[in-house]
Image (tube, rainbow, N blue to C red):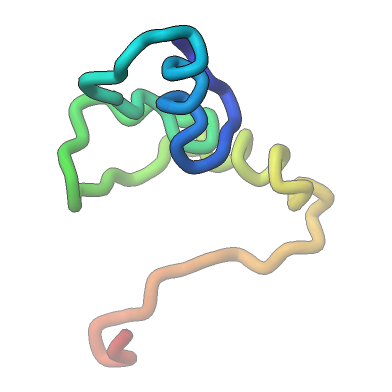
Length: 77
């Protein structure tokens, strides 16, 4: 079963309505971005094309958004 957008427990409730029981759920994408081999608590840098797609999806592709940067070591953060 593939769910592109949903609420908490929606897959389990849908399966139950069909007389099925969910044993395990695996999230393969988040906000349209493939998770790949990421495990719980891990993260990865976005590719420039992924960041651009995410900005377009969020409606931030009009050039009026600030550039997001990481704080330098002496700035804390």
